[in-house]
Image (cartoon, rainbow, N blue to C red; front, side):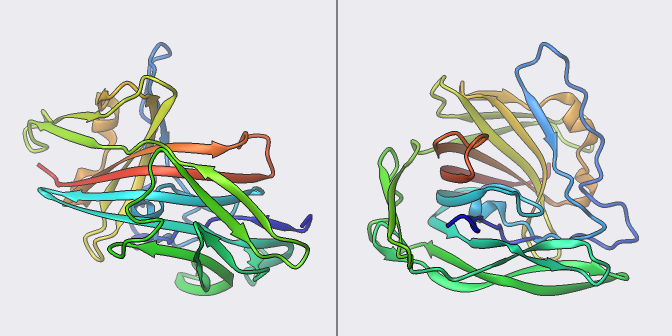
Length: 299
């Protein structure tokens, strides 16, 4: 399968009007050299794509497909006030890098994904659906299909993927013409977060403390975003990487640059990941994720 790469493409969230400053056009927060907190401003290509990012369902943010292979399985909890909804999501795409999909002016939109065989996670067959993206052309938002995606999304039905098998293994299986491919994906422990808020944006004394069940091993990723008021979907703004010690006070520099005036609600996504192999050197990236999304009203 030299010509086929695996890639997972999140559902995308549409940008605001092209005539306004985009929420992702943010000032990079100033972080001192001796800090243990890494903050990345999430700024995809606003002049090319119209993003509808679904990091609440898939757990991470991606722009143009990378030159790597990715298979993902995620256990997700979505919390708002006293309600928490759980779900399991799995996603895989098989891309032929020789089949470019371009805009009329030749700019690359992505690569065509193909059906190469039945895909399953823990013997549950993935559903094959069209893989679509939205892009901009002369001020208009158009969409195109880049091929096929293999998806599993489970909320209520009990089976081998739901409730999500934390601290366990998920068996991936691909029935390919050149021979079946099968391996185990180790899953992380369940992530449970908590957000404590002090002060208000009006009084300019807002302080946000984050807590989670840390392990003191490795790092945790925290995605910070606002909820789009038009369609109530999350818009990613920052990605924070910090030691998995269970506690973080959001830096003042980030609080000063966060566009609170654009959103009525904010979301923090606590993400723990386990990779098969080394993702920085491997052609194929295989990852299991434990995610807790917490949404709250802007104080």
